[in-house]
Image 1 (cartoon, rainbow, N blue to C red):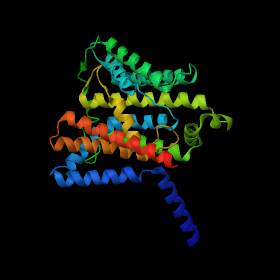
Image 2 (image 1 turned 135 degrees about the vertical axis):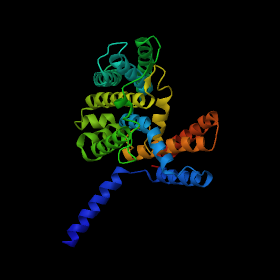
Image 3 (image 1 turned 180 degrees about the vertical axis):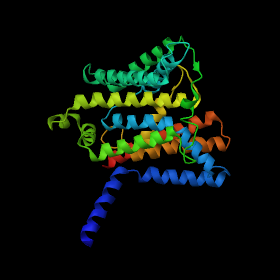
Image 4 (image 1 turned 90 degrees about the vertical axis):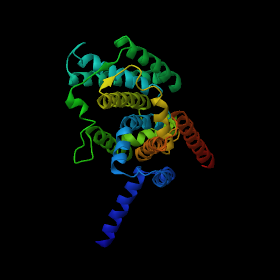
Length: 328
């Protein structure tokens, strides 16, 4: 009986370690960063500031989940920031009284459909048109940004119902907003999918070698299309969350977000070559970027210097990934 219990505990431990495989380095980096900021600022470890960090990383965290799937199959998606802007503008145009006035729920549904369609088109450009992912998503980035501006001729839309903005403001149980809870639930769902579902494991196989995966009977093209569609859908969902936080939507939203999203995934231990990565690692990468930005703000560091620091962190993460692959 004890042997059976020990085996069960060992299996549970192995499953838990799989969720955070390859994340020891980023986790240590996050811990050291938090320690340094705790010693150099008086407010970093306060409950209020930690909750603020969680609020600030919600949009990035949701987008990074989708980007993790794309990078796992050896792809890249440069369009997520523009898709975020397009989805939020679609939601505002459909919901706002001065335009279609169909209500926020209908606007959210329309935004998610458009965002998912954008991702699917990117996937089809990769699988059918045989464009490199970089070029396919670069094209979608331009198209989506242009469409976002065309909807209201470049004007922002301000003012949504209180119930909608409260999703990111009201803290249930004293600490958890709906938007933060949504990010956590999505992370758990996709972590389970990648580790315990055959389709999730297939994504790792595609990233390792698409041709070998195809010969093994894995529907590479179909899964690639779905991965890009999900990435677009999550970018659209992030746009809705951002609209709730800002109580407005504007076509210039999301500029540069694709870089932060890719950086979070890579910092979390994923390989740009594909086949390596985890949702747990991505969560740590998101927190590193969020904590770093928050700490630099608390220290009064110039936003321009912050850009330099984030760039250096990205370069170090990619260099570490390259060094690790050469060793293997």
